[in-house]
Amino acid sequence: MKAMCRLNNVGRVGTAILVGFFSLGVVPAPATPPLFQITIESGSPYFLPASATVTAGAPIRWDNPTASYHTATHDGCIMGGPCMFDSGSVVPNGSYTLPGLPPGRYPYHCTLHPIMRGVLIVVDQPATPSQT
Image (tube, rainbow, N blue to C red; front, side, top):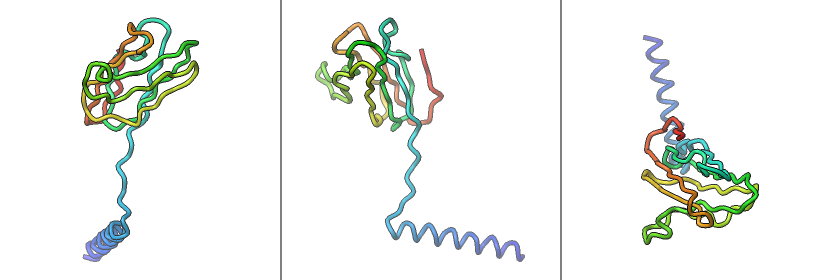
């Protein structure tokens, strides 16, 4: 019986702490999924991975270790749809980070080199990184 009372008191204290945080406007934030990295390549497949599955809200970074300028531009930006991201010119040895995307399928390309194409598949649940 004493153990039950202790558990009950611990539960009450924990609840009181949570109520205190909420009343102060302090709400625990959900954890941000880890950064997903894409490398811009000079040769095929150009974006590595060319097809990537990432968790909604995960930051995505394109790194450009090449000697040329490149972009990571959502196809919607030039096809009359919603433009979900456009890096502008990513300088040699530079990078572009997108804070995250909602679930969906996002084909993208380099506007300076249209042969360079990739796709992001954004899912609700944490995904095991997919690379093809």
